[in-house]
Image (tube, chains in turn green, orange):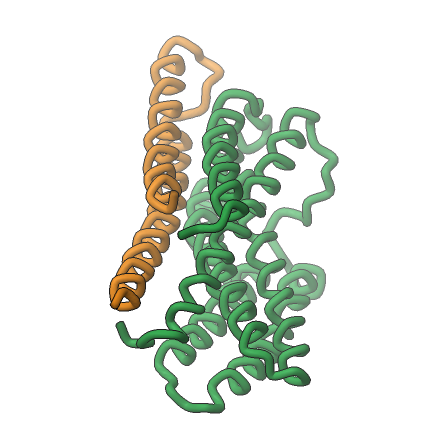
Length: 215
Length: 73
């Protein structure tokens, strides 16, 4: 059974997703330069922020785990990475669609795209390792991988500043007020969704530890 | 509650698609609306978004159900 807080969180997320859909397609004005395709930005950028936030939190948790070796922290770190991986995947499926319209190509060797793909591959490797490993040292190895993977996080932010780039500038909130409102709503709903997914993943992992991992 | 969560993703996908189609209908008589290619790509992006989210939630839900089943005496 889900706890009352989880039920409330899921209810808020569902309502938020519905409201966000209406806001994106009905309230947000058409952006002058890019046209309708810019509406992808509301879910693409907020998913990117959520994934980086969750990966960052998992790195911090992994650091604390190295000192405490608490199973709860290990589980929380794993849940953050699984949830972050979902949002990173959402970034990677929505981004190329925008790129095709804006740049004329699904994918380029642009620094931010490349560093983000590397990040996605690292965490994909982490999840495969955690799913396949049965070793007693699995949580420790997982924490070390999570810590090392965190090195790529600042690279994603800094890469466009170091090399030539096409990717739009970081979000500065200097938009038309209606675009800003919808973007802030997008971030809020995405963070609610991230919290709901992470809590459900944590709960599932707790059951996995109690019962067979290979079910 | 989890079912509601999962089904809501499907509902959101449907709602987004229908809103886009409603805009398509209006676009026919509005010269300043965006071109058909942009609309199709926008529809593709939101469909992919919902598909990825839906696949993950259904996988998570089925795994949780199997675990709960095995937990019962």
